[in-house]
Amino acid sequence: MYYANTKFDAAAIGFDDQFIYEELDLEHAFRQLPTEQILNDEALVAFKEWQTMTGKIEY
Image 1 (cartoon, rainbow, N blue to C red):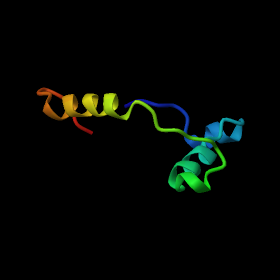
Image 2 (cartoon, rainbow, N blue to C red):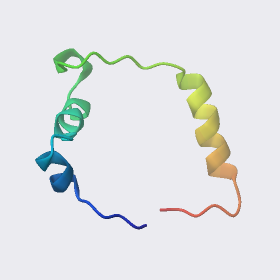
Image 3 (tube, rainbow, N blue to C red):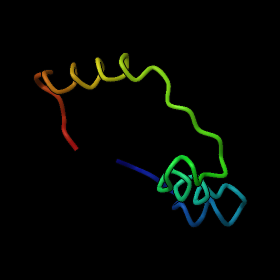
Image 4 (cartoon, rainbow, N blue to C red):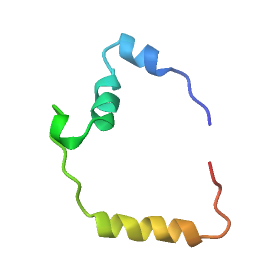
């Protein structure tokens, strides 16, 4: 993985995603940012495919 700027560099110019990270840590009822889970069944299919895939590079 290569990268140039840190999340702190991004925050310094107004691209601060910390609010989103904090929102995701909260229960849905306490979030200020409206969230809705969609397509869960379809997404689980992709996860199951990943689980059984050979030759993948795990992280």
